[in-house]
Length: 465
Image 1 (spheres, rainbow, N blue to C red):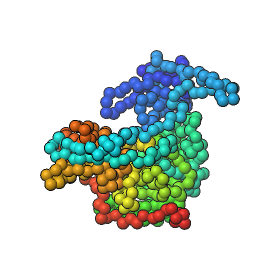
Image 2 (cartoon, helix red, strand yellow; image 1 turned 30 degrees about the vertical axis):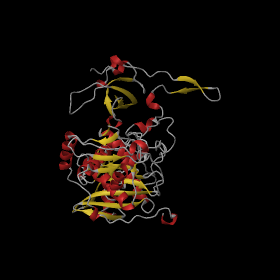
Image 3 (cartoon, rainbow, N blue to C red; image 1 turned 120 degrees about the vertical axis):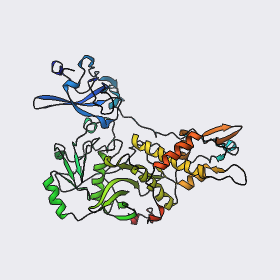
Image 4 (spheres, rainbow, N blue to C red; image 1 turned 90 degrees about the vertical axis):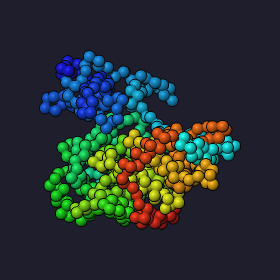
């Protein structure tokens, strides 16, 4: 496509097909929106968002990748009457309006108690499992915040504290254009170089640097390699602060109190925001605990991922925010983080659920974990005195610490619940069984409860904060 962009002025809000270079498939020309325009060395660059793609694929492109023949200019802002009768303008682009996202896995309606008492179950392999759905629990109030949580505030000694603009703390009734664009080019963390997927409110002075350097043990951010090297001569951490509560082989988990280790917690949240779009940043880490998973070698304990949880959750959330860093994704670590969160819930004697809405990758990981965990239990059931084995939703929930609503939505997602001759039954087809066995053979990383040394605190006693 010839660079004919100079003949027509392209402004923010324009839409047109843009060449997306795809390593896996043929190049494509999806519709994209121009979010920003800048000039570098007398050459114009355009920051584009591909309309039907995740924001992490947004990028700066040159004019020769724009299909000018199909250029759409932004519609003029329509005047709409306001409450006081005066007219006001409203963005025409749907992306600029607030979208309140409901939980991605809807909680299905449960059978009535009369129907539930009739519930019975026939797996296709001849061993039936009776499923008695329990009564619906109280409804959770809708969460309009991010599926993830957390905080950022001051950080270290570099320029200034993280900036307030674009921090996503306030009502997002107008989506700040700043927060829609990646602002960090590259992060060096130990032996890894990471390309951020999303905006993160690091100090503005650092956003013009080609590389932002992080100490991989305390997560302090530094503006140059020289500053990092100087910092490393003084930083004596070789693992996250806090208590090591799990170790098996090279995998360890550290529990970090957001009040006792503010600086580390805030730096962790800034790093995580680079890879979490729905994450809402708060300035106060005090109400949160952070569980950081590390891999050990001769140089120390290297961060792989983490999850955070509220010290007190009225909604039974056992995870507020969860992330596996990109170099460690697709290797089973995400599921290990999820499994660990439920092991903590088991020790606490509670059922838990992640805060919604989940990111796209988070939802995939949770669905997979819930499916494998529930199928593991159903396939291990033994017939009782020649009768088909029976289990209730409540029992599955108690064994796994997975909240009832998530158990039911997973059974429905797997299409296991059927209604047969007046009874609710679970049918385990050969395809489901074979697929589960193949998946479990690949799942080498598992949490060993014997290696967990964790004593829950009663956070309702405020003095413990």
